[in-house]
Image (cartoon, rainbow, N blue to C red; front, side, top):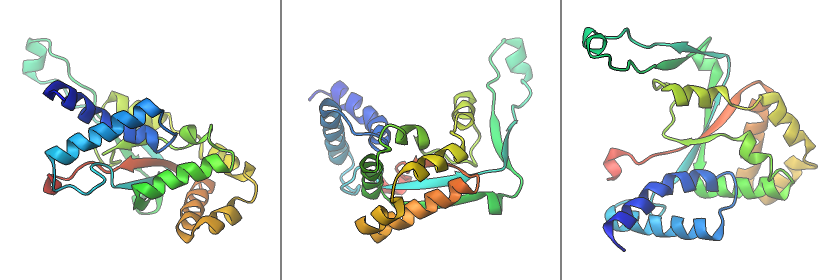
Length: 208
């Protein structure tokens, strides 16, 4: 495998992992993911066997507004007519009450996706759970990040979809205690008006 192909596969891993969390990969996508992870394992041998995205953090947020924090264009930017990129931040009424998180292994995230398919929510699940990597609600947002947050589904709709699944809690409990806890956390927060997204943890500098 040449260097260019190795780079291409490595760059595709994050997108494939994000897709994998919401829907099954095609055979060709799974093959590319396996090759990409093999490249990463060779490049970064000290990483865990997961080689990217070894855990998932569900973030639940509510009662927030997106404010424009773009700095005024500098004299240099004005003189040379350089673009002054927009910047935004999320502002909460009460961050302590309006932000919650729930973390589990990536393998459990895949089991959760399969569980949703098994209870008849396979088509809706990708719409119910936005996924990104390294997306912290405290970070400054670019225009596309802002649009991503604005496109989150209505929590009431998400909760209603869970209600459509028959015997959801019983099926979750029958599968495992961890699944029952995850479903309860998700359901409770949607019912209480939280918008939920999944953040696939990026590599930390200490891991490289």
